[in-house]
Length: 222
Image 1 (cartoon, rainbow, N blue to C red):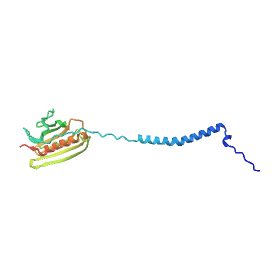
Image 2: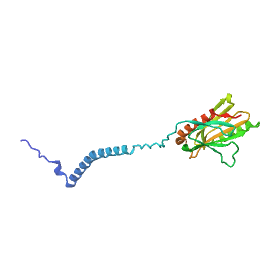
Image 3: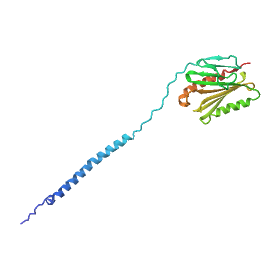
Image 4: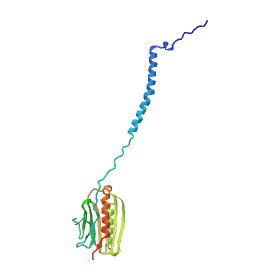
């Protein structure tokens, strides 16, 4: 005769506390499987959002409309003459240390002035040339570079040297002109605004062309 074994449900032997604990562990495991990946995704998206780099806007400057280049002749009772722009004016130098034949070429729209001084040479040309170089290199502390350009017009006995002072120097362009015997003229360009090579770059180039015209058209009076 076959003896039948009585089936006993394992859960029947578990106490109520054990059942609750088992059920709680199952809920925790389920929550971990669901919420941990979800939280990880949210953290990744949040990190990506925070890593967006805000590119600063480039600083802009007002556009300058320059006048058409036309020139007129300056002469008068001076030992020299040259061409200067019709959109500029010539005024006598009013500095307390001014000397004879000193003048200013003013550019109102660019707020710029070319200060021109004159010296009569009496076997002391080297001194005037050295002074001109000294006044240029006074701006060396603010200059990024100083470039030079020579001009020679032997038929007019006009010889010149132009200094381009790069950077935020107070005077960004100077020059001198001489016949190597009797006359010496020095010029210095200043802007009546705080030095800023970026904002002034268009105006500097515009006035530079006028300085080149001044030098190339320069003549001594006999």
